[in-house]
Picture: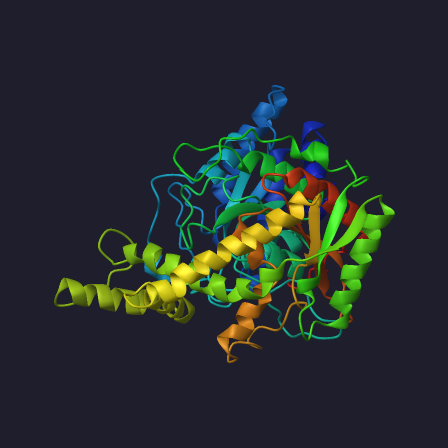
Length: 495
């Protein structure tokens, strides 16, 4: 098998090939290291760790030889640079963390290494995960491996997990970790023809992940297939006593749910998700998705989530408020960037002015404003009340016997780099219109590739599940994946 062929494998195929000794962990690691080196034009990786990858692959080969293979033995993965990795720089896509090398490992990445996975490096992202296009990274935007038909315009991969989605779509890793605060796993997955699942809040530990909005953030995988996402999430999830929001529930055998089908399930179609100006091709895809599920034996019903229209404004109060609190720790005192000044207040000001980018400053200012005396009740408290109503909408629908909800993943296909940068910031925020409700309610959501738009770009569908019922999402997502046919990933024009 040629090295190019090794990077074309799915995670499941690579796992089975390694166990069957069709190739070695070292060979598949080297194939991916070479692919990463040839794809620097995409700017997906901020930090490459080839020596570490080969050392981990050697250990994996020894384990396989002894018949002691762990669940992810020898599988090369990329890690979003929001996960702290022991003695490997962690930047969060920001200049303010320049030179920061954690002395600890995030629980999620620790779980992956415990299960035998191999680390290829750290992936680019919107600064502090604040963005929907990966254009706010202090280290430059990620370029999507996709292009519009007959066009060379560079496109965004979505955000904030743009490096993760681009790397998976460009065959620069078999799977990648990602995080989702308002759609940052599902939106880039939809833009790049990959699968992304945001699990239920509390399913994966947040310990060692650089915080954006603590009540919304959740880690999950981006992969090329639904089965691969199930395999990765099984390793990533689990109770962690170091994270008080981590739920002490057993992790199901997610992969077993993949072929389960949807016979007898009820799938809801929320009427409030038909937004003004939604492209006809998104509407058609949504109807097609409902037909696929119906044909597989599911009952499809219309449901109402009446508070959906308040979700985006409420989200953009809650998330910046929590961000302004979380980002107060970056002051130049203990780690990261320090800009000297004549006194400590001056040092704080100069360090933050130089270290934070425009979008991060915007959200800190919004957050500080809504938490300030006189505005706290008018904005933050009211947004939290709306959040409760959004959660109740979902609870009512699920109490009526609905097993999962089908919606579009994004309001459009990927756009060009720079196309929305000078627009009203709200236009960029509208990319999250279908995804933020899931974070506000703490529910699981999966984005699955379902087709291409008129310009040949991927479009995704989203399934939203009951709390801690990721299994139904894997079962229903697999039905859509099978019906739509695997998206052929873009040819490697960047080599």
